[in-house]
Amino acid sequence: MKFELTEKHIDEISADFEAIFIVGENLKHKFIKDADQFDFYNYKGDGVLVLPQNRRIYVGIKALKYDAVRLGAAKIWNALKSYKIKSLKIGAYICGCQKLSFSALVEGFVLGAYEFDKYKSVKNSTTLDEIYFCADEYNERELKFAKIRDGIKEAQILADFTNFAKDCVNEIPEIYTPIKMADDARKLADEIPNLECEIYDENFLREQNMNAFLAVNRSSALPPRLIHLRYKPQQNALKKIALVGKGLTYDSGGLSLKPSDYMLTMKSDKSGAISAMSIIATAAKLNLPFEIHAVLGASENMIGGNSYKPDDVLISRSGVTIEVRNTDAEGRLVLADCLSYAQDLNPDLIIDFATLTGACVVGLGEFTSAIMGNNEDLKREFKELSAPSGELFTILEFNDYLRDLIKSNIADVSNTASSRYGGSITAGLFLDKFIKEDFKDKWLHLDIAGPAYLEKAWGYNQIGATGAAIRAVIYYLKALAKPSCGCDKKGA
Ligand code: BES
Ligand code: ZN
Ligand code: ZN
Image (tube, rainbow, N blue to C red; front, side, top):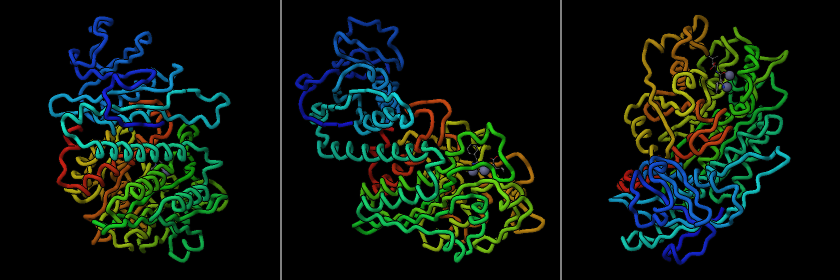
């Protein structure tokens, strides 16, 4: 999809269709050109009205906020995708102190238009490909044209990498193996300046005493990979950040086998690693002022004569011993060793990403991810600064009663809790066991099990992978890089 920003007035642009936003119930705006031709009453709220004879589409959005704009763009796309048109134009829109954000529009169009049709014999044939934004209104208000253009470019990079992540997660487990993930990481490093990649195999894991990670991999016919991507900015880095991702290319549950209904969709158990990989690639492309490391633990969790077992005790990389009580709680084992590895990089901030618990989906629903950690300010800061991304997060609090539930009689910690309640937090508390004292306040755990993979479409997300946490982290990092700029918040 091509986006072009012009300083011309909307009426001077020739395009096959024009899209016009109606914000709230502002039906008097000067851009509304067909007021006499539609029933205002039906139009209230957030509907779409297509007037093919006039070559115009109206879309109602609740407010001029980023996420409403993304949703509006996705609705325009869905309403027009079957029309044989090539181009669309959209004018600037200012309402009080808020303006229509072209970058949110770009995100809405690119994310909303995504389809995974690799395995469909009949592909979609949408012809709409050129979108013109007319910034003449903004020029009158002295908003910088170059800045808007940069925002559009950055939004496109972010949305393209989010769609790349969706492609990876949607890919079938037969093809998307740990080796394929490593190949993709290497390809990104080859393509993006300042991004480097080291791939480690099982021999390295053995040398590093990553026995928890290795135990999960043991029953798989496919070897594991530890993928370490590194991005160093051209300018001085404000912070060193480690992203750690759960990369289970398939989670059958292992010997504690999942029932068939629950096994289905478990190709998505690599979402955390894929999000971490896409975040570092986006940050490198945007040249964000942080040194970033992405540490991805890639393996399958399968079943076989050589499987690790409930009753095993594993000696993890950090030396903390783990009683295995359920082989389906495998993500935390892989992450335990990867988190230990990541702390040796001495980062200022560690964020891990994982489709870690079914309990998180039960508790928070399919729309919301969980934020956990020991630092109240850090959790709050992440939630607030990532909010304009449109991704939803809830903070889940640790407490010592829940901490007691993962005590083991035979080892330092058990990989499952002794109660079936509070499963997301006890999983977070398990990870906390592997965070050293110096890093306790520098760590965030994001459980993305709900929104990472959808069985029903919502918002501008399709069925299947969504690229969960990618936009949230990029918005967060951009806000950290520019702490004095409050303007993003206004549009949120
Ligand atoms: N990958 C799953 C968690 C999951 C479930 C993600 C559903 C997305 C949707 C994880 O490895 C798992 O199986 N966790 C178990 C933990 C339990 C055995 C303590 C779970 O949530 O049931
Ligand atoms: Zn599992
Ligand atoms: Zn899993």
